[in-house]
Image 1: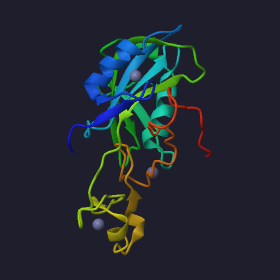
Image 2: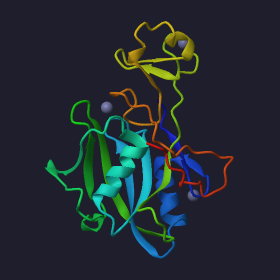
Image 3: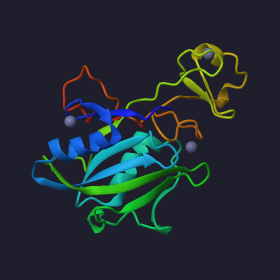
Image 4: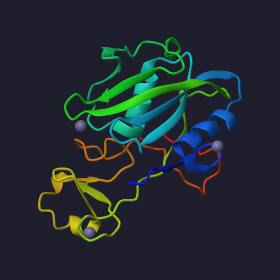
Length: 216
Ligand SMILES: [Zn+2]
Ligand SMILES: [Zn+2]
Ligand SMILES: [Zn+2]
């Protein structure tokens, strides 16, 4: 996979990961609410990345909820943050971290998804109700069917094989098939991205609406 571009959800800019980090730090750093700018990326797939702000008075559980919703939640598995192997409790306030700190987030202790969380630094934003606000994420990867080269839509999780709709019909046990989704948890357990409400849409107004909630 080529290094992934992504989009700013505030103004629509398209750029690579580092350029987007510099962009949001500079262009979207104003308002009354003090926050941390956080980067999250797949521990094994750095082309999966997010930048988001978290209010300094928020607890780590707000970050846990956000990561579950955008990237992880399938069957209500357990999760944890760790710093240097030690658990960092979800009741801890994010302001007890410092710029430059890095944590590991683990979702599901069976077929685990590991996510690296980095505190980029302080940033401010207009006051808002949600503790976490998505600023930018990688564009969905464009993958090809490993059998015919058409655009892939599903993954055969048992074989780790990307397939198009047509070739997927040839798989006898369709319990193995999961949708190809924009998450480092793609293809794990029963993950299908159902709760991810943050799909970048250049035709919608900016900042992109983030309020629509998914019914559980
Ligand atoms: Zn922007
Ligand atoms: Zn699951
Ligand atoms: Zn195919």
